[in-house]
Image (cartoon, rainbow, N blue to C red; front, side, top):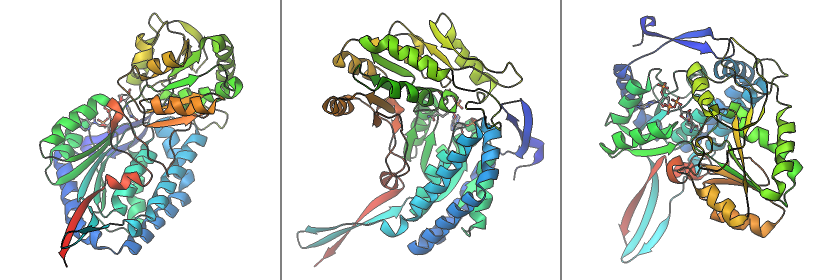
Length: 455
Ligand code: NDP
């Protein structure tokens, strides 16, 4: 078991002070947690669907009861404004409530076949490994835990070392809600050891991962060895296409939230804003005005609308995108301590510019002009990623035409809203494999079994 000798120090990014010391483990601790999840699996999958549903509902209610405590913890640990943290904890509660409805609705089919009938069952997979990032710690973990448990699987979760605190609280809440020991386990430790052990241990039936495309690629390769099921939610470089006929005021007012929200540390960030040339100057001016309203500061100050970046390394990585860049606007941020970075708007010459190609994961937006619809779509699709995107226009036919043409898993028209608990979320191309949320997620936490009856 972990000891405090190998304690992990958790830092508060707004002031660089120690927020907590938590016990961390290594590969042997991961192996023990997998053992607990494997042992708990037969009894958990045998729990009547109605009872599994009630237990998940209770977890949802307990998260809601603790919302303020969890939100303050997340705001301090992940450096996000308290209002955003509250909304995210609310999403975690909603996700448990949504999937609480699933156990009694995992329906199969009957299929007429020669000489009899085939019927299908949706079976759980077994013990599942979850590896999650630091940008939306409890929300993203819940998107995986809730459907996994609803379908009758047991789980080992490895949260990011930078933000393990709400996952550890959730472990307590799940037990308090009455879910038996061993069904949900949290292991804190480095991705390279603890995470990779989850991926390579043959007792783990599936890995669900959210994080960088580089680590996702490695997980896919390692998981292939034991033919593990894998779902990956990876990076993005999403485009917002703004046509000249759009409500430019509305598009500009919504743009800061879509690219500077969560300090740009969002896989759905609309970090490439493509604007029809005739509207370019007007949009850029409106976007600059809207961005100037952002207040960067202490996450617990209700006036703050943007916090610090997650770490010094992240700030260094984000800063590197300013080298030689055309800066159209830059806001202000506290000088330190804390990993501060101001909201910044760049106007690169083309989508070939590094800042317009690579995922920055920080508060930097690129605004680039286009000539016509064909060029806008070519630019939008000219990326290895395909996670989300937006189309702003008053022409309904064009909006749908563009949405069908964009190589992206999650699109919004006249909106930048990407993620709803009720709808599938996931990426095309190197943004990932599989879908989370909505009814679709359950397909990725179950296997279809076909049983034939001779009649
Ligand atoms: P990573 O992909 O490295 O981390 C995500 C999770 O994977 C963490 O829990 C991490 O553990 C774990 N992990 C790391 N290496 C391995 C491994 N070899 N095997 C198994 N698990 C592993 O993201 P970073 O934190 O390094 O962020 C880097 C960049 O990734 C960001 O700048 C951004 O571009 C992208 N990113 C995308 C996210 C998204 O939402 N799609 C989320 C986070 C990052 P630990 O960190 O504890 O060691």
